Image 1: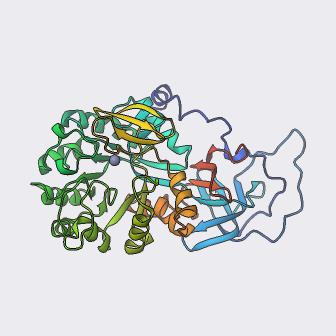
Image 2: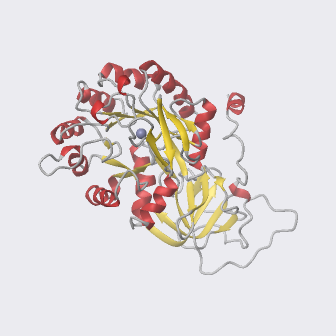
Length: 439
Ligand SMILES: [Zn+2]
């Protein structure tokens, strides 16, 4: 199995340049071993310098990140420590652990993207296995340590085949699962989806796609007002798959019915759905007011006006917002012509639009930019932003026991940001994807 994987995965099985967290040489001093636990303040002042014997550096038994502002579920700790042992965050450090001084930086949990169609020039809907891995790696370089691969509308047999390929990558831990966006969406709100391939959410057809993903389907976006929509929501809920309301023309009342049937996510709230009207509140009001719903937001400065973002945060509260990228191939790659499913897309100035009709066609966003924008432009509290990019999506995926916060026992997935919230380091499962020593 491993050799099969080595052959097929030229990107992820190699250490990216400058990776390998446990051998970082940034630290000039060694911290005292043992407790305190994750996030607890560092001892006041630097510990006495302990120079390494020249030419015989001891093999480190873990890594202590020290001096940074560490964002924990309970709040931010100034001068906190995070101890990494192997692939996990640990309670206490070994005596000979490496120390990396991150004074002046933030350490936050790795980002979790629930809705992402690709990046680095590669598409999750149409690329080869290597393409998909390239897209995954591109987003890892931007802090996304867990990504759900989203497909766009396609022929049912084609989507079932994609589900098979993506489910293998999910089994190997490269992606967190599959999100089907379409074909069960409204022609009135199709966005960048092929109209001729759209269909009503017949539960049998929905079931076919979920089955094709062999237990790795995590979310299906539906226009729940279409025939079969409510039954499909029930079916998904019964199978532990998130039913997401999106690309919808539903009324307020129809949306309430879908939430009552088990829908728990709003696919990119505001985008591809009717607006908020004073006599016709539509889906937005229903999705914002209900505590059972998490709302996805694309915080790229193009998809949403800052006031709309603020309105969503205010009404839903920080515990019910998930920042997503909805990224397409051009994310982390550049302007030019691309395909989104079968449709041609022109990316100019980082904004992706359909060549025909000019609809916005996904984004070129990465979650580090969404994070930075949320803090520096939207002026949201850092803890709320961490919830939106890490904890909330991790909880939705049912994986908060492993990811989504910096707590002992969880995967050592973390992001290092400088004082301006620019990305300086990314660690995934204990290894640097982006080494802050090189940042
Ligand atoms: Zn999408």
